[in-house]
Amino acid sequence: MSMFCFQCQEALGNKGCTVNGICGKKGDVANLQDLLIYALKGISIFRQSASLEVRNEYAEVCGEMDKFIAESLFATITNANFDRKYFIKTIKEAIELREMGKKKVAEMGLEVKFADHDAANFTVTDENIDAKAATVGVLTTENEDVRSLRELLIYGIKGMAAYVDHAIHLDHTNKEIVMFMEKALVSTLDDSLSVDEMVGLVLEAGKFGVDAMALLDGANTSTYGNPEITEVNIGVRKNPAILISGHDLKDMEELLEQTNGTGVDVYTHSEMLPANYYPAFKKYEHFVGNYGNAWWQQDKEFNSFNGVIIMTTNCLVPPKDSYKNRVFTTNNVGFDGVKHIPAAKKGEAKDFSEAIALAKTLPSPTEIETGTIVGGFAHEQVFALADKVVDAVKSGAVKKFVVMAGCDGRQKGRSYYTDFAEALPQDAIILTAGCAKYRYNKLNLGDIGGIPRVLDAGQCNDSYSLVLIALKLKEVFGLDDINDLPIAYNIAWYEQKAVIVLLALLHLGVKNINLGPTLPAFLSPNVVNVLVENFNIGGITNVDEDIKKMIG
Ligand code: FSO
Ligand code: SF4
Image 1 (cartoon, rainbow, N blue to C red):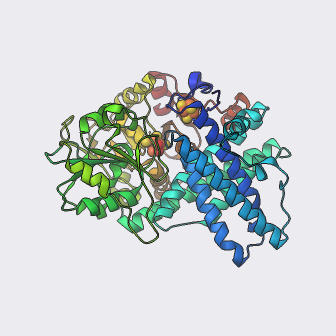
Image 2 (tube, rainbow, N blue to C red):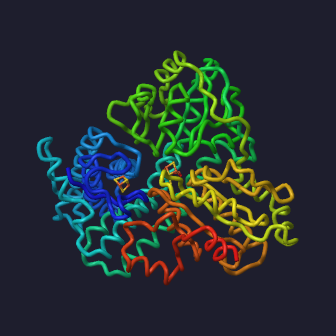
Image 3 (spheres, rainbow, N blue to C red):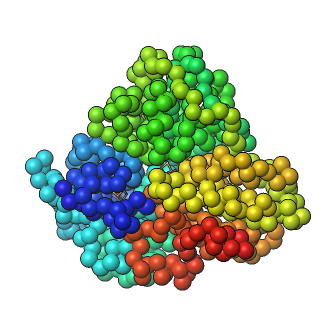
């Protein structure tokens, strides 16, 4: 099945995957993801019109559409869902929801722009769904620059949707953010938009990206407390165990509660590591620590873990047969033949009992590391250390901060980030968030007067913390421009959550960001020029040159 996808950093040849994805996504699933996005555009056509004049009777359907749109966008993120059946079912649900919206809007007599568009009217059967899916991909936009701007916007809102979805799980919502996603979706059907208007939408996505991260930050910290400096154990104990990965803290909470007193230990993997920093989770004696490294090492580390693995979000590597029967997915994650833990009914907890029962029958984890790593430098914790940090800058003990947030990936060239961290001068501090940290968080980089040289704020969405820290430093030093701070940006990207983090930084006026290991395949040369001219965005070269350029 031919396909075209260029949404992540591993796009084939840095151009695009055309037969199957490097990520393991099959061609038919890639096309079905395109069709789901197309169906979301159809829903948004009617949802958007209603937002002009929201009536009580329509509010419920709107709420349903908003949740559905956020969840579905999230499901199309790299390494989240590989399951053909999931996408067929979800596309059909999208069409039903669209028709419901269409009916309501007609009853209300609202005028609908693009009501005649195919996205607002297409239907599918099991027989023709693949054929239809093959006709709505990103290449249907012929102009390279228009395609680039449309897809940059779509990938930005996919990342935004991921953060919004987690916040929704904790009952925190913000209608305006989802309404922006809907506006963005419909805009990609509009051939009358000028380049400036499309660039404007991309930058507006950055604003809503900041809002989405603030929403999730508020949801997480008001529910689980502010992350604290924490030494996280990376060794193992001798009990049977569950390894939980992904970003969903609600799942973390419910799993800890349900495993309490069962004799089953809980460990985090990859992006769940920051769960160790939250006060609310520290009370569980059976929460042992973190096992392993970034997502792409799953195939080795899930093998040696021996116990049950629960994937709450991306990044999932297609599981090997040797451990597939011990993997469970939940939320929007899916893989053919892997057990899925369904969402809970409103007001109830998700049921992890099958996973816990299986864990009890399995051997304890094989030790792959020992010792501890330190993290928990989210905004409140860093603010508490502000005096120390400011003194260190004033005395010259700290000369530079380097934001090295973002993602990790399996590409060989990513060893650059380890080398870069090691080559930094001793008076530089790394600020990080996201799974990019695994490239240097176990190096012994030492501290400066008690401040560790790697400050880990948390997950990719906690890049928001890094923004707050930068704004605080700007205030403390009485600067007018965030770019006058002694901060360099060397960001690693992989999937679409990193895209929204980047757009959020641009919205805040951050300039001179270096993005690697490669610039996104979906940025056309002209769009790259716009980003260079307005924000001086650059790529990376080699460690020596980049240290000179970024650190001086
Ligand atoms: Fe990483 Fe994957 Fe958090 Fe991403 S595990 S790559 S940007 O999903 O979300 O940092
Ligand atoms: Fe290729 Fe990345 Fe798309 Fe997967 S998500 S098909 S690796 S571009």
